Amino acid sequence: MSIKALILDLDNTVFPVPSIGDELFQPLFDLIRERNDYEGDFEDIKRDMMRKPFQKVAKEYAFSEQLTEKGDRILQDLVYEKDIPPFPDFAEVRALPYKRFLVTTGYTKMQQSKVENLGIREYFEEVHIVDPSKTNQTKKDIFQSILERYKYKTTEVMVIGDDPESELKAGRELGIRTVLYTKDGAFSSGASHSIVDFGQLKELIAQNKV
Picture (cartoon, rainbow, N blue to C red):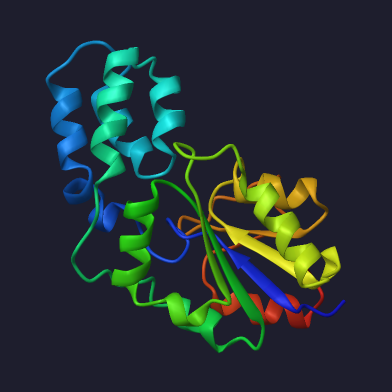
């Protein structure tokens, strides 16, 4: 097997969302604090907003239609305007001799601001933002498009991310090898492999483990 391309997630894969999350989502958190038209614990909602798209969080915690709409309006225009440091080991990904594609789910303006303030656009062949508020397209659709346009075999591509139910699931469904990147070392049986540091990627590829 010869790897030609890496498809990476953004949030909690290139950088840790909690490092900016409290500040970024403050307007949304203020809105939710004022209300009682949702189910569950507020701290759990805050935690999940660092890990999942708003639409999923709103559904899981039974946000009212009004709260969902107000939250959506806030998030449509939310951006982060300060420098964001990527995970230190992201440098290991940049050093690998493969084409890189960034595929992230979220609000367009917000995700664009993250990419710009991370200073990482130049390291990727393409950057795709799947915005659930604007499209029914999924990460799986983007992955399929990359395979077709670049004429990659599924064995020549690797999907790397932190979410077993998002990019890793999409990769599995297409027959692409998947790598769970998790700083806490939690292994997911849904991924081909699990790593805690990007420095492990080179070794995995060299040993044909992925």
